[in-house]
Length: 154
Image (tube, rainbow, N blue to C red; front, side, top):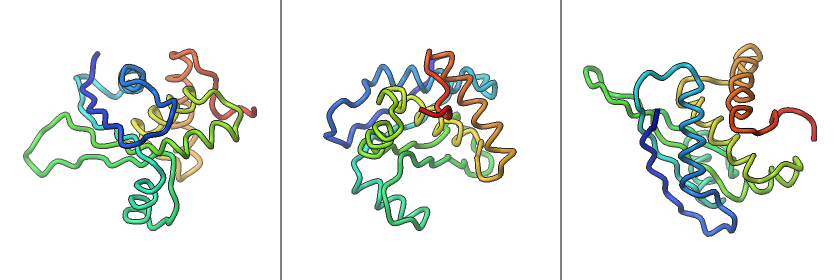
């Protein structure tokens, strides 16, 4: 199934994923999650550290940039839309984490997209049991994309 992804590049970082890659990763996350029966719509915004830090401070009370922020859409009562919400991904943090973890940068991008989409679907990793479920979904989806388990030691 093909989903509608509004992709916004608000970063001048080199080596950003292509729109096609982002679309492919979103489609994989939604189609392989087992939760979706019809096309969905979401926005993926790629930002630099300043915007990520501002949003992380405003919405999570954390004064630092972060890899991915997920903003699920909550429709008003009586309104039904296939709008999942928004993902904001910080290019600088994704690159730094990929380097620190000795992973191919595009594999880490794919992981952050999949991770964020699963958050939009209601998955979380605060409790250990929930984290196990979410991580196993991520591993399965990334495997379908030919990407190794992101949680294995590198």
